[in-house]
Amino acid sequence: MNYPLNNIPERPVKPRNKGITMVMDKGLSLRQTEDFIDVAGIHSDIVKLGWATSFVTPNLKEKLAIYKSAGIPTYFGGTLFEAFIIRNQFDDYCRVLEKFDMEYVEVSDGSITIEHDLKCEFIQKLSKQVTVISEVGSKDAAKIFAPYKWIKLMQAEIEAGSWKVIAEAREGGNVGIYRGSGEVREGLVDEILTQIPEETIIWEAPQKEQQVWFIKLLGSNVNLGNIAPAEVIPLETIRLGLRGDTFDHFLDLAKL
Image (cartoon, rainbow, N blue to C red; front, side, top):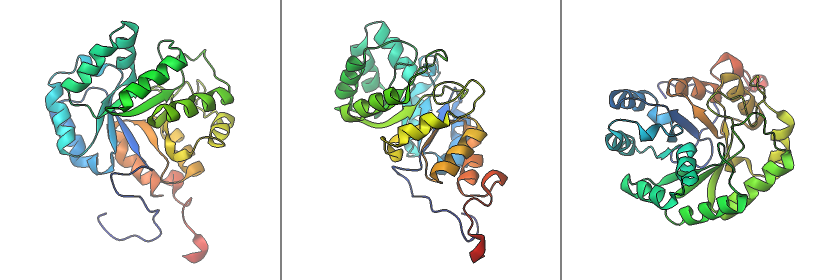
């Protein structure tokens, strides 16, 4: 930090297992990637190249190399995995991971229907060669899962080999763990947390109000995902109680 300030929540140093900020790169140029890392790389734990943007991103290898040289792991969005699976190209997908030297992968079924046992088989296979992050929840707003089902799916995917499980919200933060308005399904989150360790979950929270809600519920070191590159610094100030939304949340005013 640039100067001393007392009563600031403690953040673990990178690489960290808790307090993760997962950033969504939707198509930054090489220069924008370098600028992003220069400003916010220190606060970014992992970067997702959103949905299947890697298929059309120019200079992909060079871009991945920039992130790697900065010590920031990357992975392709789960929609790309689904695009290969629905075309019966799992082996081709594995070759893509090898070609681009990917160390992380997202396994999801938000856009297609995959039998859950089969999804867990994909997780098991991939976890032997890469770190798997799996996503639970549908991108279809009409598909609403009961809390017990979220818990069952998450537990099975962790047992299959997932390092973290993502709670689906899409880029807009208006499906899955959120209502169409962006409001958190509080009862759902509470139920999930009764069975799934919080450090195992990455909550997609692209909207500031959603970030604030989770930080107030679970503290500075909650795992949050789908953060826009320009919002990484603002999010870090929310985590530290240095923005109006959480300004007095972490302060013990009686000791000041």
